[in-house]
Every structure is written in C-alpha cells, then in structure tokens.
Length: 254
Image 1 (tube, rainbow, N blue to C red):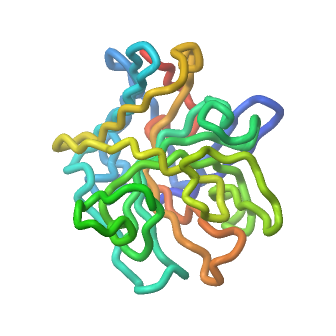
Image 2: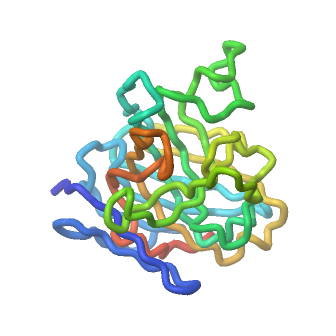
Image 3: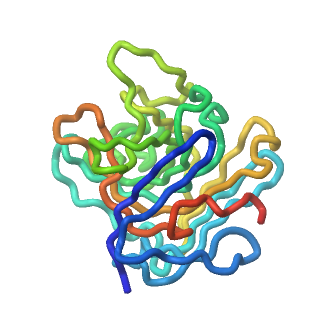
C-alpha cells in the first residue's frame, strides 16, 4: 500500500545512518545487474514510485539512473507565485562522496545529486533550458544540481535541509554555484527522461573518486521557507526511498 514518509536522518562520526518514521518501511530487494531494486507501490504518485536506482561508471563518467513505476518527470509542483513557500519536486541520489569532490569544503555534509523542477524560481543562471534567450525563466523544466544536505530540526524533527550559508560568510563553493545562500551547485548536467527512467551523466576529475561510491535513491518534495531565511530549503515530504531506510546500500557498478 502507498504510504507517506517522514525522513529522519542521524549521523555519527563518518558513518551514515538513517531511519524512516512511517507506518512501515520498504525493503531492498535482490540486486539487479547494478543498483538497488525497490518494492513497487510505496508512493502514491507513480512517477515518484521508485522501482530501481543505480550508479554505473565509465572511466571518470558516472551515470545516475532512477526507474519509477510511472512516467518519470510527469508531475510538476503547482506554482504559488512567490519564492516564499515555493515547492520543489526532486529525484535525488544521496551519495557517500565527499562534498569536496565537486568543489564544496571537505566534510560539508551529505553530497547528493538532484534533478529538480520548481515553477516559482530559477536557480540555473548559466543555463537557458527552454532556449528562449532568457536564462531566468525556466525553473519548471527539469534540471540538475549538486546539493549538500544536513539534518535541521527547524524543518521538522530530524528532517533534512540544503545546508544554509550564514550571512557574512564565504564558504568554499564550486565555480558554478548559482549565488544562492545555500550549498547548491548548478553544473549544467542535463537530465534525460526515458519513459519510466530519469538519467544523468556526470563527469568527474578522475575515476578514482568513484571507486566504491555508495548511493541511494529518493523522490521528495522540498519547500522554500515562508520567510525565505535559514533554513531556506527543507525536505518536507519524502515520496519514496529506494532502500527503504536511506542506508546507501548501492555501490557503483554493483
């Protein structure tokens, strides 16, 4: 039966541990040739109902793939007309990669690749996804980000947020940081939708960083804070988790 999730995250030392507070948790099924096979029917909306997630590599290029039981990318958030309270839908691959791998400070938080859509704002200032000559009006088209996540009880007990940048500070960020006060990158890796799948290919500096990389798959809704202040962007609804418990059981190429 479909169920509503509330994501609860806890970290201890270098270990990543997590749990879901829900009526029940899904189960990681036997691995397909690569990745995490997930139980069908755990999300109310089929295009966010994960049935498989995987990470495969070819040298320094990684392919992140998520398969759902419906048509991937079919649903978009309803616009609210303002940045405050704006909704974001996301396909997310949390990873064990250090945030420094893509240009953030070492140990900054949980590095995740996200494919997002949000009609009320645009956070890819270098990209003109709809090709109309205006790079600031296409936030509702699916696009990719690196985000750094951490738990913040201001988003709900144990819930995750995109890490905020406090005023007056200058943290280490990638060159394609979109100048938002959060640890987010807009690297321009274009997602590809193939019926029931969303795919992103990302090239790293060296293949060594991908050796043994662990990952999970999540579909989620996020929301901009009503006062557009820290926490700026919270995970407010988890639609599905490939592993069922955010344990990052997937390993690249396995």
